[in-house]
Every structure is written in structure tokens, then in C-alpha cells.
Image 1 (cartoon, rainbow, N blue to C red):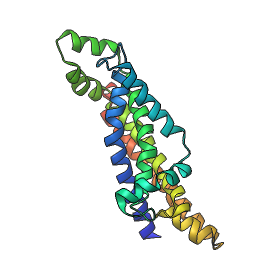
Image 2 (image 1 turned 90 degrees about the vertical axis):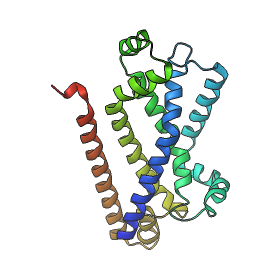
Image 3 (image 1 turned 90 degrees about the horizontal axis):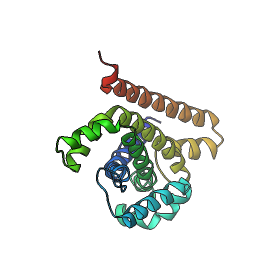
Length: 213
């Protein structure tokens, strides 16, 4: 059980990290690439990006895991195990992260962006020095949502060979009728969610300049 707990943390943290690395720039593009945005991009490109993000978000995770077996085997060398489950987790999570980032950036007061532009800031400077710093509390809150969502996905990955607490709950709890084991795994998952949520909320409050006097 302790090893499964470590596997779950390993999968969740790495999958969240890679999802943020991929999803953050895509979310920035979605928020700033419109015709009237900070960094206007060609409309066909925006349509393609939105289409890909929407398609990946609409596919149920279990089906997505099976669909990306070839890609998982290409990257990791196998489709079963702890590390292999990270690939479909990232593919499922980065579009979600991108939409969360887009939402955070769109919440920024337009007057702040206009002030930066009036002082001669380039689009890149507006994004890096104004938009992202201003949206840090919201981004942290949304990344907390993302990591708890990915944690729930890790449990589902146990159905088709993923590691962690999901594997323990299904293989040793459900299939062998050891419901106490399944209950213990669920309790540990709930505890992890509470820990991640508490830490994320604390960091969001700490970085929110509106709460400082």
C-alpha cells in the first residue's frame, strides 16, 4: 500500500508537471491569439488549436488511454505500468490545463493590459511581465484543480494496468473481494486530494496581492 501511494504521487506530480509545461503556452495562445488579443494570430491556426483542445477534452479518459497505446509504446516502450500511465494522463490533462490557463488570463482587468501597452511594452512583455504575474493566484487555484483531477485519473488507470492506488483498489480490492483494501485505497486518495487542495489554496491566498494590506 505504501509503495502504491508513492507510485500515485510519482504519476500525479510528473503528469501535472508535463501537463502544465504543454498546457500553459497553449492557454496563453488561446487567451491572447484572438483578433483583438494581445498577440493576434492567424484565424486558421486558432481554429485548429481550439479544435484539438476541444476534441481531446471530449474523449473519456479510459477510451483515450486505449487510443494512445501506440504512442505510449513508442515513448515508454510498454503500455502497462506506472510510467506508461503518465503518457495518456498528460494527453488527457494538458487540454484541460490550457482551458484553465485561458480562463485565468481572461479574468485580468483590461485596463492593466492597456496601461502596459501604452507604455510601449511588446506583446511578449505584456504576457510575461503583466498577464502571467497578475494571474498567479488564479493559476495556482486552477493548477490545484488540475492536479486533483489527474489524481482521480490515476485511479482509473489501474483498470488497464496502471500503477498506484487505483491498481491496488481494483486488483486486490475489487477483483479479490477484499473490500477493506479497496476502502483503504479510497481513503488514501481522499487524503491526497485534501492535502493537494489545502496546499494549493494556501499558496493562492499567499500570492494574492488583493488580500495584502
